[in-house]
View 1 (cartoon, rainbow, N blue to C red):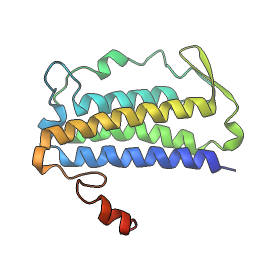
View 2: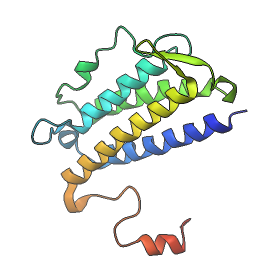
View 3: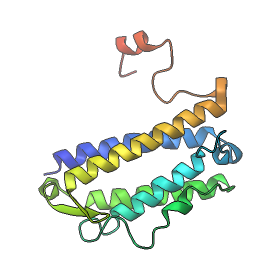
View 4: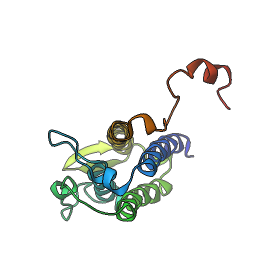
Length: 171
């Protein structure tokens, strides 16, 4: 059975879609723009999410989720790269995640995995990863909105339309 795994996978896909929609609205320059006071650009966050997923979900059930070849610090290095390179990196991480999830069922939830030598249940590790991804995707959306200003296309319910959506939520 995959009831819980499917639910978690659905949420990961929802956040990926929000990240995709953010990236789609930004130019290559905007994607790489570092906000004032040394924040992270959308590209840096995408690099980090990808690196995290590749590390955590490669050999998910059998090796420590912090792989020795991961260079986490470099994920936060400012970079000036084309949109295609950002998308390649972004997609690479999500592909590793979804491949690992496809191999799980609810019977795996109580198994133990290790992240930085800390033992966690598979369920706890998945919740931790989902929370981590949603945190960073939210940062990406915030940066996108900040960069686009009035040209930003809302990813969820735009301001002023809550009542309309509540009357017809499937429209």
